Image (tube, rainbow over all chains, first blue to last red; front, side):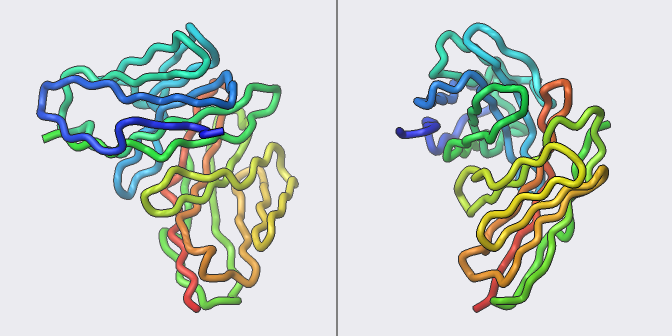
Length: 114
Length: 109
């Protein structure tokens, strides 16, 4: 199993450009998450999904969109990139259940908006 | 407002010098508290989940405990390979996850 994979690893965007961060997991996990991590700050939840076709907002959803058409993929869309979106983005997945199980994280995408 | 505070921000230990990391939290309806390890340039790696006050879990040199207001990650006789940032997170009944800013641990040989 590759686990959680993210592409690209690095990206530089100009202000106003758009892009999609890709996330794929091969563990058949129903739950998937997108976080951003800024220097000196904790991870902030952007969006999460409990299954294909179901998404919901996290703590910091503004400026982002998500979709979940398959169990495996959970892309994050940035529209009209702004310098404030410069960050490291992590995708994670977990199994559902009455109690919350561990989240498996991808290696991250480092995004710079200039 | 749900939040997580970790202390200290940074900790330097001699190899073999045991210590504890603190995670204090306020959350409306705690469903779980998590500890992760993060190495530079990598994603967090799961260590423990704790669900209720009084619960304890152990893994090698690490032991996590939980009270109604805080959690401790005890590191016994640490080795240089334990050097990393340790993250604490909580989840509430609204499916939201909140992470602390982490404790950067350096273990000196």
